[in-house]
Image 1 (cartoon, helix red, strand yellow):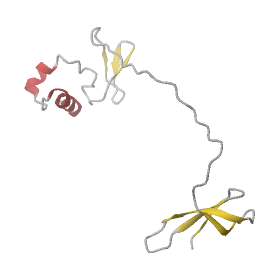
Image 2 (spheres, one colour):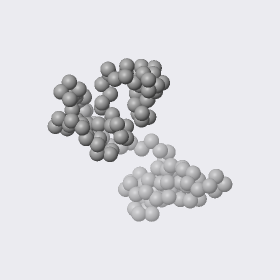
Image 3 (cartoon, helix red, strand yellow):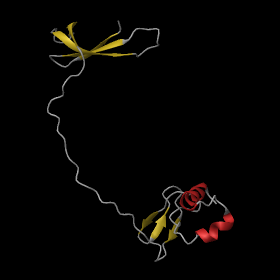
Image 4 (cartoon, helix red, strand yellow):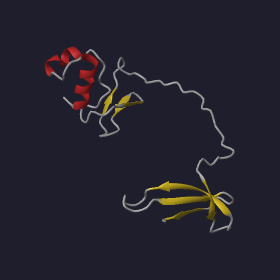
Length: 133
């Protein structure tokens, strides 16, 4: 008996994978699992196919079931302007537009005994650069 079936049996009935109790468990429709690899089989045009190993079997008329999910419409959010939440360094000079003032962010990019790396974003043109200090 494969691991997926044992887990399914244990979680749903409390049977710890005892094969003597498998016959009493067979009243539940567990044919949705592949007998070779234990993957979940998908129903396709009257057959059940395992996407993992390719095992196929015909679906019996009583055991063919569908999983139906109802979706809801998604709300679309448009961001018109992104606000900077980083601190402003008024002494930093942009190497691209040569304007003064840039937002910065500190990150530890190297080992702990090395100083932090300071990432700048120009407040005028949006150019990004870093300073290893």
